[in-house]
Image (cartoon, rainbow, N blue to C red; front, side):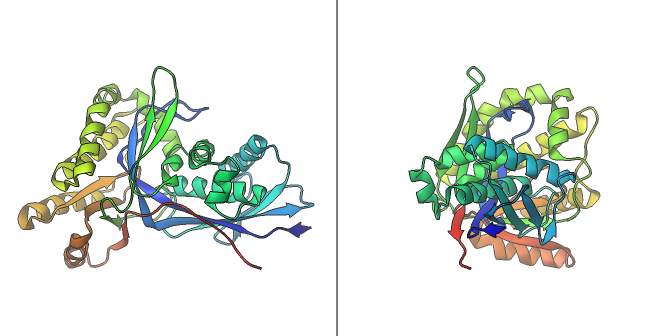
Amino acid sequence: MTMSLPYKALVPANIAFLKYWGKRDVKTQWPANHSLSMSLAQSVTTTSARVLVGASEHQISFSGTLVERTSSFGRKAYAHLDYLAKELGTQAYLQVNTSNSFPTGCGIASSASGFGALTLAAVAAWQQADSLDTLEKMGFTRHRLAALARMGSGSSCRSFWGGYVSWKVDETTGEQELVHLFSDEHWDLADTIAIFSASEKKVSSSKAHLDAWSSPLFEPRLAGIGEKEEQMINALRDKDLSALGPLLEQEALEMHAVMMSAKPSTCYLSSESISFISWLRKLRQKTGLAAYFTIDAGPNIHVICEQQDQSKLHSEIKKCYPQLDFIVDHVGKGPQLVVEAH
């Protein structure tokens, strides 16, 4: 069995400001609502893929450990490779090695970066493309790559650009559109991720997505999404954190209220998470520090502030939460693709 050169993709997680929650169609990954996110710089999945000549199955390893096709992650990852191979019309098998720079499966969008990186590395290996520009010349634009990755994880489509990205859906036609709203250079926002649990969630986001429709709060939430999206885009355009921050917090709490009022109820927040949210709001009132929380589907809290205020925020966290681990991140430039030498 021989192998090609490894094609390495680095794809960032993204933190949703306007949350993707609920699906209108699971098979086509058609979201219930528009969403809007910021791509991160340090929270990244790195995935290498190479073609295995003479193999009869894909091989996927996560952080050096072989992933079985029958495992929870393996079922999704191998199925996505099978889907990609069919879409590209190839029967070649791949050896894939992947790892995250941040905790996995606990609400920091590891599925977004993971399936984005798996898609980019796999397509590059099959096409022997050494850069994103080369892929584009072959017809694999970022939009096409994002559409392929979305079938593994919906939110992965937003990770194919840096800066700020909107994922829109037309309820009439069912068409989906990705809009690169602003680059990372437009507004250098910082994201401090407070880690209250690095353990994998007991209830997957995929499962909780399906339950969203049973919440009595879900339809009212959908009715207000368009107005909220417009307000967020205006705040981003104007670089106005005093306008954006309260919207971030309202949106996060609204999504978690939908989760908790669904049947069955899902609560990702811990008592420590809730205590931290309360502490942050009191800190803002007391000091005027412009720092606002948002939360994805997990117990860990993202705190968004201006880059110039991040060190002050960290000092305050260390004083009140000396044992708390946190990730220092900020808006990033988007995915990278390189070919590794032997």
